[in-house]
Length: 346
Ligand SMILES: [Zn+2]
Image (tube, rainbow, N blue to C red; front, side):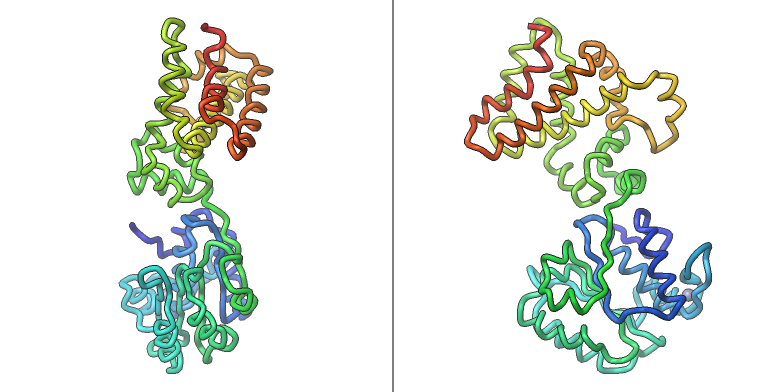
């Protein structure tokens, strides 16, 4: 996977890059940062963008913050990953081990080789094992002069409190839908017409989008949508076939409910907005529907239900999610989720 390395590449994390650039400008840098956020939120790309700024020999003032110049020796070496003062430490296998931390501490004991600073990234710091974490504490508290440490982790709760307390914590929000849509298209994760759905459905996380594709979320969505469009004669048969398919596992029912919620949301939008209003808002990448590729079918379905029907069904889905964690028949729950869509047909 391509890694973003420029501040401008880290779409969705603009606020933090501005904060970091301003702190650097004012000479208020902490010696250890922890970037905490869900997997796929762009923490590593953000850590790299901070590192590039720190290693740039001639950072310049952008619109509202410091940015790397992009042309100095530091920037060029960074871009080629040959900068001797950039150290990146990742889990070896399942964890970050003591010998890796010892090795890092040895590196840090020497002055930076090429620039005024050395930057050390510890990626997936939640995988650090206990002896390694304890060894790291002293370095985090007082790294040798000229060294900056940037850790990434999915949550502060996954780390020892003593590590967290020694770092300045920056919370990474997920990517915006627009930023995630760009990344999904760039990575070619799914057919272009389904990219908007995947971006809306992935909670700002590229890795969640990747996981969903592996779980065949688009096929499940397609099957559900075919069912929603079902015609009178085949409605019951289709209900039983689909219900059997999704009732096997709790996760399957939950995924179906979550996908149906995106259809419901789109139906509400279609019922509440005139088509003229929607066309006016259809800028590239900002389609108003979560499932724009199904717009025609959704329009037809929306005529079969009132807003009240849809709102009551939405409340039923809340109850189904609650019941999924109780001892209630999954067959019953799956059928009860689906029957709403054909009750006017049978
Ligand atoms: Zn530079």
